[in-house]
Image (cartoon, rainbow, N blue to C red):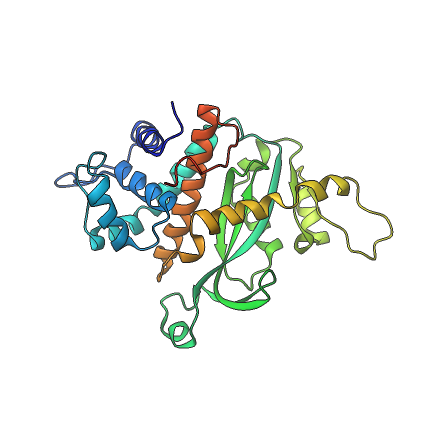
Length: 298
């Protein structure tokens, strides 16, 4: 296998078609299968096409050899929004198929996902009641949208993720994720989670300790003695920021274009799927850098 976009898309299609048999629908089979749909969505994210109309024009001109049938924009949008559960299943299947899946160290952090900028758009948005105003400390500004809470390995492989209201406490989201999928914790004895100061809470420490999980995060400056292992944390605390930068910079997370709950959810999943697919393929082919997208984004 080689690290080329065509090879990556072919391997992804074969993986989905072989391992994730989708439910057979009544009536005539679709001209674009679910495996082809998600492969097309991954290619869109990797090649940096944020608009679906421009992407489909490019696909009609350059990808006819790989996709015998390509839908129009309304059909593609409708199929993609309905494929959110399948996209989540493919992310998990690809991640579990790598040697990084059972890594005993996790990194957790949250990043803003802006959905609307102007006040009139906020008032008429279909995301009202789910999205809200939050504050981005990195850019020192307020935004209206959601927060992506991502748990990944130090190599950048996504383990699990969630979208939440920016006003919901990060610690509460982490506990909810652990409660929702307890098997992720039990499968990794002695799990260590690295986090920033936003996850400081005695309640969270007790919650994770009861499940055999250690949480390592920076201590406050007025703490007399540093926490054990804090020196290690300083060398790896920027890893999650680099993963978020890959999602936002190379995969266009901030230009997702979603306007509904299903639309935002599937477009975020589309970017995470593309990142997971690249790491999975790089580990399979023995590429030196697991999270590199340079071989695929052109």
